[in-house]
Every structure is written in structure tokens, then in C-alpha cells.
Image (tube, rainbow, N blue to C red; front, side, top):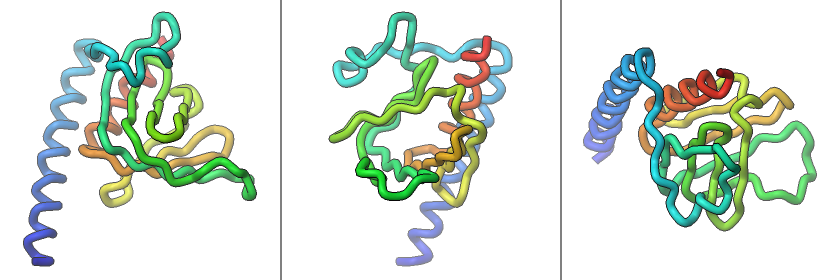
Length: 144
């Protein structure tokens, strides 16, 4: 069973990497397509803000420089990448401005975000490699 699971993880990573490569090529010549906002994210969007990617059943673990905060750190929900923010909508709603994200990197199958304020987040999402490319493209587009 362990070998079968490892083979499935490796196969999934290969499919994810191929999708990320295709997205990189596509975003070099064309802008990200916008998606129709669903009822969960629509009321949270600012005027002119558009949804460009969605990951269902995401897990987000926040890392903050200040301990003792009463805000929860391990959250689940739907993760929306917009033209301006990364928004997790679940039991709690959490938002990160794209301009605050300094770097996005992979650690195994986790996507790690480093923020300017010393904060960070670990994301468990489907296709983390593709999500990393999507975040980079959205950040670049947001800078204008």
C-alpha cells in the first residue's frame, strides 16, 4: 500500500507540473482568464476585483511572528485567487493582499507563502505547483 500511495503522489505531482508548465507558457502571451464568482466569494469582492482561480477544500496554516493571537491558525475552506487577493472562505474568512506576498515556494506537496510583514502560510491545495504559477501571474498582473 505504501508503494502504491507513493506512486499515486508522484503521478499527481507530474500531472501538476505539466499543468504548471502549460500555464507558464499561456500567461507569457495572454492574461489570466476570469471566472464567474460563486455565491461564497461574490459578496467579498471589491469593485473591479475578479476571481482567477479556485481550489476547493484547501487547508491553510498561518504562521505569525507574534504568538498569543486569538485568531485561529489552522483553517479549511475554499481558496480563491483574485486579481488582488488570496481569500480563504470557510468557517472563518482570511485574506492576503497579493502585494504583501513576497514569495511562494513548494515544500513537498505544500505551498508556502512568505509575507512582507514576517507572516507566512502553508497551503494544502490541489495542484500546488499550478497554484504557485497562478499566484505569480496574478501578482504580476496586479503590479500592472
